[in-house]
Image (tube, rainbow, N blue to C red; front, side, top):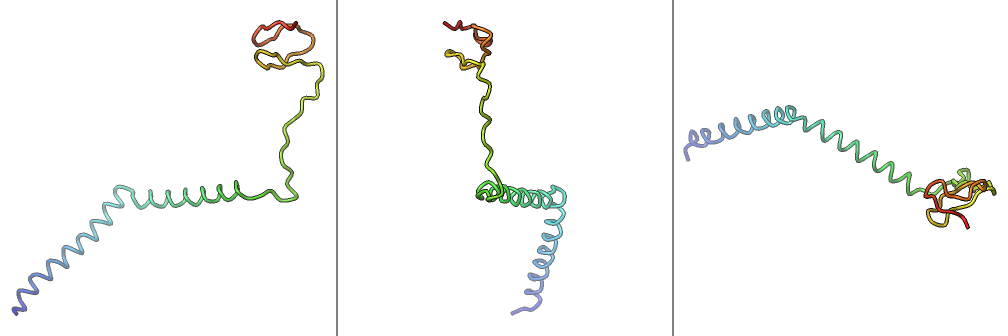
Length: 100
C-alpha cells in the first residue's frame, strides 16, 4: 500500500471534518438555534411545574374556594334569560320579559 495515497485521503477528511464543526457552530449561532433550544427547555420545565401544581391535592391548611351564595332575597331570576332582577321591577332589565 502506498502511504502517500492514504495520507492524501485522510488529511482532507480531517480538514473537512474540522470545517464542518466550525461552520456548524457558526450557523447555530447565526440562526440562534442554541438560544431557541435553551428557551424551549425552560418552557418545558415551567410547564412541568405548572402541571405538578395543578395535579397536587390541596393540603389541610388550604381551603377550597366556594362560590358566593346570593344572600339578597329581594331578587328574582328571569325565566327567559336567567338574569337576576330586583323585586322592585316586574320586567327583566336584560331581555324585557314581564313577570306575571
